[in-house]
Every structure is written in structure tokens, then in C-alpha cells.
Image 1 (tube, helix red, strand yellow):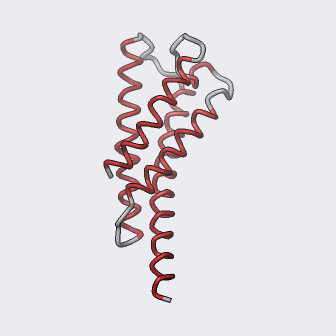
Image 2 (cartoon, helix red, strand yellow):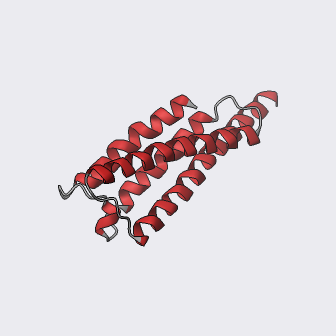
Length: 135
């Protein structure tokens, strides 16, 4: 799972930092309103998809692949949300609106879904390769 988490964070952290630094206010894009954050969110979602696929390598069952994808998502979410909470505290932006809480919840759901989907896609591709070799 370590390589998958590494990839996910190597892509997600700079992407989220860029989203905050665009207007030099260093406020999260979701706090500013509008749809400007969607592209950045898509990049982060794809990072979780790829990370889930890498985390699932070598798993013998679809269930274990899913567990690896979920574990990657939980670890990645914990790091990203923890860093955001620390950053908000340091910058004095600790209060969160209901919109921010909604988007955090949505981000958690999407990250979990994408990581598990990546893990299952990797597992299914591997099962297909093994089936092709037998035939």
C-alpha cells in the first residue's frame, strides 16, 4: 500500500496547494465558492484511483483488493484532512462553513470510491490476464 499512498500524496498535495495559492490568499478553493476547484478535485480523484490500483497489486481476491483500496483511502484522507486542519489553525481559518463541511464529506466519499474502484479495476485486469494465459 505504501507505493500507492506515495503516488496519491505526491499528486494530491501539490495539486491542493496550487488550488489554494491561485489567488495568493491561500484560502482553499472550496472556501472561495464557484466551480474553480472542480479541475483540481478531478486530479486528486484520479490520484486516488491510481493509488488504489497500485495498492491492490498482488491481492488474491477482489475482497482483499477492496480492503487495500479502502485502507489507502483512509490513510490518504487522514493525511490530507489533518494537514488542512493544521493549516487552517495556523492561518486562523479554523471556522468551517457548512459548505466546506459538505465538500469535505464529498471529498471523503469520492476518495474512498475512487480508491476502491482503482483496486477493483487492477484486480479484474489481473484476473483477466490470468484467464487469458490459461486459455
